Amino acid sequence: MQPQVLFLAHRIPWPPDRGDRIRSWNLLRALSAHADVHLGCLVEDVAEMARAGAAIDGVTASTCMALRKGSIGWAGIRALITGQPVSVAAFRSWRLKQWVRRTLAERAIDAIFVFSGQMAQFVPADFRGRVVMDFVDVDSAKFADYAAAMRPGPVRAIHAREARVLGAYEERFARRADIALLVTPEERDLFIAGLANPKGITVGALGNGIDAVTFAPDAVPAEPGLASPQIVFTGQMDYAPNVAAVVMFARDVMPLVRARYPAAGFAIVGRAPNAEVRALQGVNGTHVTGEVADVRPWLAGADVVTAPLLIARGVQNKVLEAMAMARPVVLTSAAATGIGARDGHQFAIAEGAPALAARVLALLDDGDAALAMGASARAFVLAHAGWDAVLAPLRAMVLADAG
Image 1 (tube, rainbow, N blue to C red):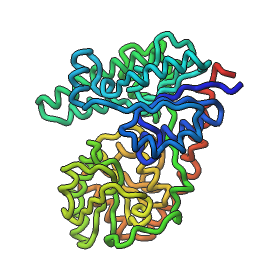
Image 2 (image 1 turned 120 degrees about the vertical axis):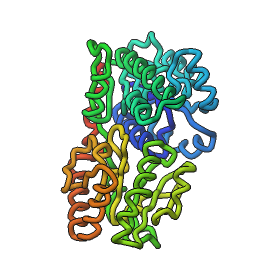
Image 3 (image 1 turned 30 degrees about the vertical axis):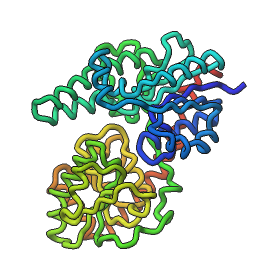
Image 4 (image 1 turned 120 degrees about the horizontal axis):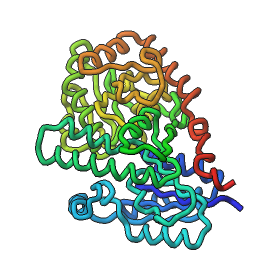
């Protein structure tokens, strides 16, 4: 008889078009090769359910997609009343909770795989099978970073509270799990360092990978009509670290680049650009695309890809995608965390606007060096970052007790 796994995710794992979905989709597929997987997840609307239906049904034995309800404002009020983290209260669902209970009663579930800390609330206290808690990143540390970067005031206080309450929540559920996972050894060590009492808690690292067939240099033609030279950033553009990164690059780095290359363009490619990002349209050669059907043509046409993140947690899929497409990448050390590539060989690390501009200009000045860095980046990805290799330990982690 096939092992039975309950997989809980805070977002539907399809389409794999953003960092969390890329990871959850590949985890789901990998587990479905070894077990009957029952997926419980939250969705934003019925259209999302319809788009994902056929793909999800192809890898799961049963599925519950529960509509996420309520605003972040109501979640904040509920969190203050209950003492919960806001990011946990925002993902509560009575329907999903009942489905989990019913699934556990009707099926011999061997293990529960929890993807993201928000979903730990759905694991019943009386479940006696194996529990794997994939935190992915240390979210509490992210909120602490937000607070530290702000001036004193109400927003800073909200982030500081979230960091404190969420940190306690993460520790409590790490203790509940048989193993807690983070995406990089650095995140694992950061998580352990933040525990009030690490005794009895098992913490491991399970990385992110890349589909190097889909993201290949010759997979798609370049986006037509790009600037020359063209610098590209990809990502979810209402996510605060991405917003801060592109604002800094457009306003502080691009003037230095355009002093030598007046026609240079900076393309910000990604869905849901907020007002601060939209305001960059036309600033120092910046073009804000909004959501695109496929980021690969933009990467294919990039002379340089950049990831100048000041705050970053875990492995940046955007960096792996660009490396797989043999693009030279200029990034900060925060964005390079967990990848394991070498500065000056597979990518170029710099901190601050002048240094970032200098690394970009060096690659634009020397096309052969840029091509060599891109080729080395793809070779690195092929050798070290394929999903099959990265997720090889997954079966033993989840099904250790299921034979």
